[in-house]
Image (tube, rainbow, N blue to C red; front, side):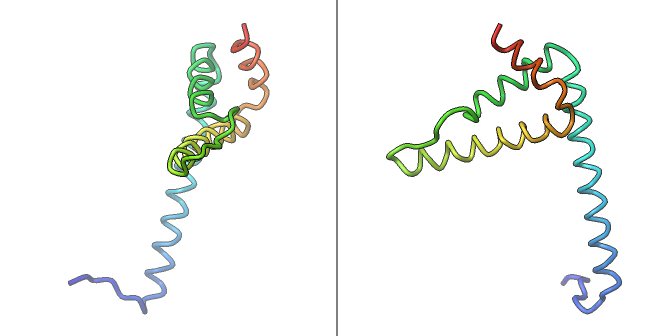
Length: 102
């Protein structure tokens, strides 16, 4: 049997605040990790490879709905990575593009 009391609003508020803090720290950690990766040519190359393989710059359309759903899932993770790159170090994104095209 669980000790969970749905009527304990104080406990629920504490748990909610704890979750918010944990999520905020995880987001900050993600941003710091991306900044670290973007700070070196090797890291930018790794991130570019991830974004490119995710299909961010390709159409996901396929007549097979399951294949298309899989492609969209991959693309979604690539777009999430792109958003992190733009949030963490937008000034290095053009450099990453330049290096990828060399």
